[in-house]
Length: 289
Length: 321
Image (cartoon, rainbow over all chains, first blue to last red; front, side, top):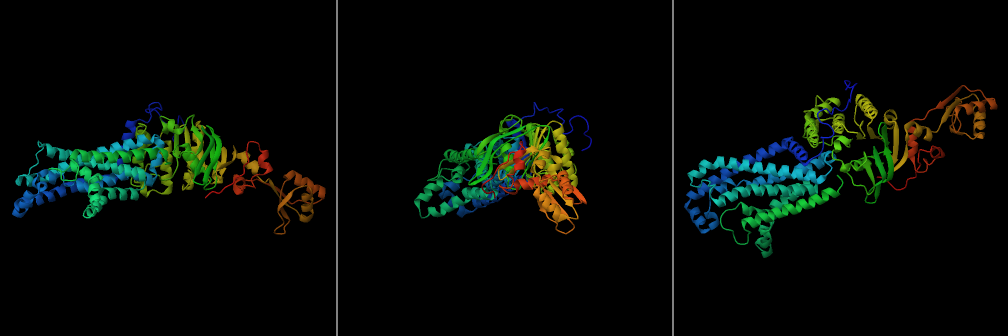
């Protein structure tokens, strides 16, 4: 603090002059990337997700193996075309159901964590165009989720490869449907992350946003499934829920009655995400930080 | 340079900032003084483009904050102590903010050094004391080597050494020609740090003048006088138009007089034939001035205040939480 008697004591703009120091979208992206990975919770969340995607794949693979060997199961599977498919892809992608939860929570936290701690003010002071901040965050969340999904699927494949080929269920990436299910898992998780990020940006409170995301992703399908037993409308609505529709892109085999085709289902999930993000963008510009 | 024009902020039925107009000039430390809830922080957030004004406008270095292409080099702000994710290290926080402007990591190390955070920079902010959090906030403000600084309660939570450091820093930044705008509810701190002061109460500007003028204008120029004949002196002084603010409480002949200066009191005593054992002008402080300004809508509407010219007396109405 005392070695400042000459020149500009507080500033040394020798290598970064005020002329080239400025906000660009690339700079905002880099800032968001640094922020995301400077939190331990992010590393824990990603590690946990990858581990569980691999672990659940192993569980499913052994269940498929057992089923393939049991004569009773064989009959059931022959009777229901949905169960007759089982290729290894069902096991390898099985962990998405859990992964979507951690992905949703991590996506929510990237934005609500800033509001709860007050960091958002520093962020908006540095990058006053709020849509620039939100899109940089969204891009970072989407890229991270895609990477996580690819690594998780890779781990799941590695962990199950020997079991699956022993049962004659080895993954066949040359098969168009299997490839779509694998790519669909990545796309599905990215869409869930985007939707959850949008919910977080709208609510700004961690508790409210996580409750909403979990409600939409998990509770609503369960609720409607129960109601569908007694009310026909519930069955109709069920097919259009974000996760029910989106999951179609991961499913293999013929489309069951009342559910959307894989492409249409995913498009609907993406549409929900876009709608929520648009609402978040509008409110972010208007509200006080 | 910060220029506010009729700036207002209304939350529901509460008016937090009520049409304030002021200019903060470069080269001097301008204090922003007011009790809690007076509208200081809200005004500062509007300067930084964080809160949207309900009316009026405010510009920094000639344009609204959000229009600057390189805001961190224009304005550095400390708005809240410890407004940092508790799980992030101080250095990670600074690096992420520096990255928004493409500033080199070397600049991060410089502000860490400058704010004395060297030993804790790689520790997570959750474990920081209030003082450390405050230093980190100041490091953030200095990151872009800005032309203008907006510091909300910068000495809050600092130890005496830290307070002194902020005082020197603010004065040095102003001496370098920068605009320094710092808020406080601590009048004594302001008297030591600021050259100019803007006093705000209930969302309105109560005074906008050099510190010394505010003190002089609002002060009750009091004189303490001790005499063996207090009752004689008292009636002579009152006859001359003075007010006895503190009568002879302990019966040692001491009175406190306002409305006349020491010379006038001495001459009246001579005319009245009363001896004086003590005659002391009581200098009022910025604190007195501040208390008087913010005490009540009626009280700060004094003739003294209006006569000061550069100070605009205002009445306030409405409630503030």
